[in-house]
Length: 190
Image (cartoon, rainbow, N blue to C red):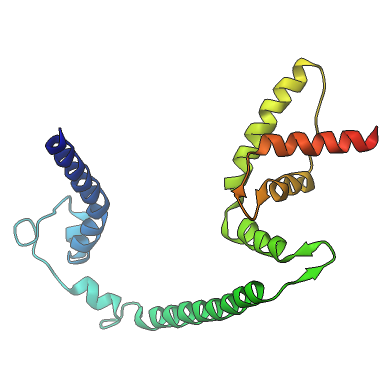
């Protein structure tokens, strides 16, 4: 059994690798074809099915009236590294400030600031939206059986996300949080 597992594992890795690498190999071999070789039908193996040519690369780098790709590429590298450097410096300063000092502006504390960055900037909203909507869909079905309706706003979803997170334990199940919030609001109105 272990030998079969190893064979299947490496077979799957080999299959996936060829699936991922194939488009890059196709693009690379196509870059060495002439315009007639590209439009003349499928040819894949250099020197057997077609004669490689550097004409496409020459026109790409501007040698014979082609487009100039070198300067825009260098500009992109400069902008990318500059933006990355600014992000790293500002992120490091913010992380240092949040870890060393205690901030409290009204009800907002360090844990709230960290949660804001994690929930709003790092984690895509769709990761949180899908469980919320599935839970609300289930709740809506249960309420419709009793002929009741429930309307929830974006602020309510944000409150549910905030209350569903504990800095010590991470994310918590949303059902008890939602039930607690609804019962607290209902109790306050009664």
